[in-house]
Image 1 (cartoon, rainbow, N blue to C red):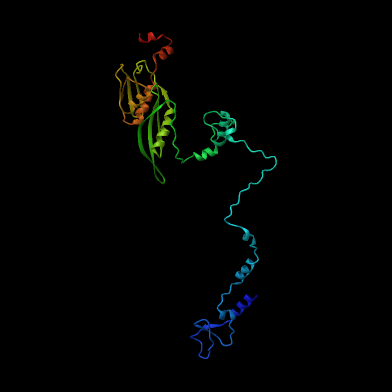
Image 2 (cartoon, rainbow, N blue to C red; image 1 turned 90 degrees about the horizontal axis):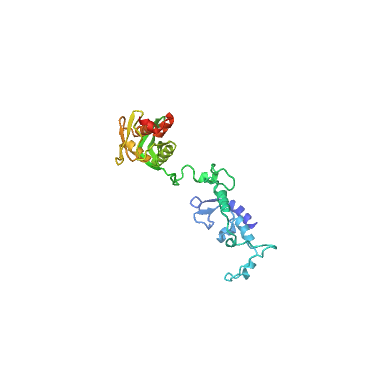
Length: 313
């Protein structure tokens, strides 16, 4: 109440600079540079020089005296208080430690892993999930943009990069830069395939072309001397390839993409010649076309219905 009365009396003051005051106003002022008008009553707290708290601070200061702090008078901060855990409830049975549990079977471990990471790609599921559908959590962790290195397929086929070129595609917004890779895969036992793929990175282009080559596997007819059974010619576009069998010890006498295709197929003795264009992709596919025209002698004899000896008469 006293603070409110003091503020109301302070608001009624009329202060003015002392330079503007007349010489007749000789009232002494506690504030230099200001003078009080004659007849104005100055509050006593201004003359005394004491600091007065606002009403909110005064109320808070009054409330702090009502807080009981006698509890802390008997507490020793340096005293060590022992920890007493609460008593367990009635009927509580502590769990068995994990090292005392019986060992888990392989099916239980597989079921636990499958529940966390989703269905396995090994073709075996324990929980009855579809092994060909990727789990959403696994897809999110290993989706597009992940830097996880992909492992090569272990199917017995070797990969050989024939050519990597930078190609551009003109679109409405400009040019799109990509890499084109030509890869030949083969097991060197009579199976070979040629594939091509494009991607924005060289590694991705090689992987795509290797997958495409595995989808186009053909079987090469070979004799016991690892050569062709007969002559054959093939063409693809403007490229023309001539293949001839060779005697043992000759080796593969060919160049460019023809040599790579023959080596990956497992041919050890053969002659090859590129007669048309020098395009690596067209020559590789022309070689595949020439190989597809070849047939074994027993196949021809079986089609004609005659013994193999009759083919040379």
